[in-house]
Length: 340
Image (cartoon, rainbow, N blue to C red; front, side):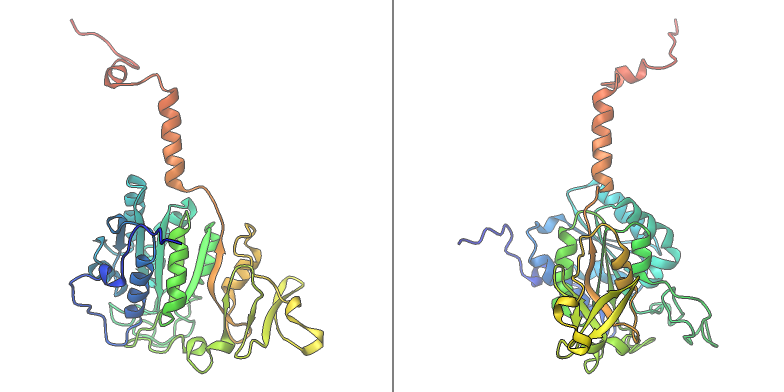
């Protein structure tokens, strides 16, 4: 069968001529590679891509992409990206942001973009610290974390990105790990195909100010037992030998071991990312080690009207029913008078 793909791009086609200036070993390098790989596999013309960022280490991203881009100001990437998409619905708009940029100064823009379901792809780099401004605690920093702005340990409860997204009426939420380029690429492709706001949380490592913050679940020697990669329509199974899984006991998720108490794979929950009721997806997004494995993959992906499509339909309806068809109609409408 002949290949009907419109665009024969390679990841190299999306690399700009700018020197990548992230720190050696920074997780951002792997995210960049995964995004470039994902775009090369999408059937979208290169000139249709736009990357928009706020402020932070991750926000240098548009410079390293050979696409259209806009480097915004702190916390305002969602507002800029929303305007770009509404004015140009045919574009594939990607917002690059961090846990500080999106959830602190940009928190209001972030939740309302999700609530409106504007067709944006938001990649949120979560290293649980402010990296560019040199190591202050962020809205996702673990309670008790000692930083330059919390020398005795932060006393604040951190945001859970997935909980925030689903609580804001989010239709698409996924989680990946910076170094897992294969999983990340798959998720970015799914996000691009989703109509509506897609939010991808990346567990990203800042080697300078918060090195190893995610190692408790992502380190090579423990990740198979402490993470679960969810796949729509498949059993929730994990472990080095696929010996563990998740069931629903009452109103709570429970980790079980296959073979014990008569438990088999048939007893495990089947992941349904497309279930409109977010109850189980909410619990999956909030799972934390050691009680549970950390959930990776596409956790929620449901259909819904997008803001820009509803705006377009509203305009068409108003135009169809309006008595004003031209400028003369407008100028002669309402309270008018003739000056002799």
